[in-house]
Image 1 (cartoon, rainbow, N blue to C red):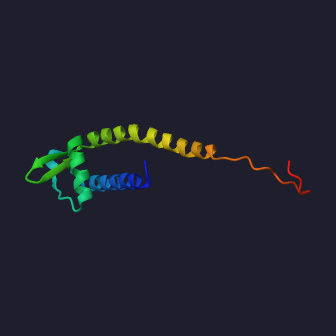
Image 2: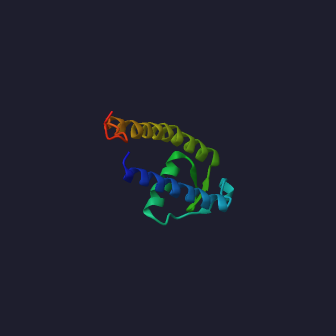
Image 3: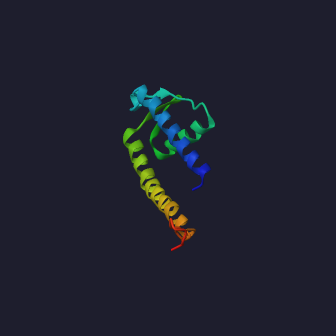
Length: 115
C-alpha cells in the first residue's frame, strides 16, 4: 500500500462516517424515518453507492433513504477483518526491511583504536 492508497482509504473512511452521521443526526434508521439525501461530491457519491450495495443504506422511495445500523456495523466489521491484518503485515515489513540494509559500523573508542 503506497501513500496515495493510504490517503484515499482514509478519505473514504471519513466520507463514510460523514454520510452515516447525516442519517443518524436525522434519526433516519428505519423506513418510516427515511430522509432525502443527495451526495455533494464525487467521493460521497462513490461511498454512498458502496454503502447502498453493501445493504447499509436502503432506498425508501421518492429519493429518501434510511440507514440500517446492524448492516453498517457488519460492513465495518468486514472491512476491519481485512484492513487490520493488512496494516499489521505492512508495519512488520516496514520494520524488517531496514534490517537488510544494516551495516555493522566499527566503534571508535576514546583512545582512537577501533575495536
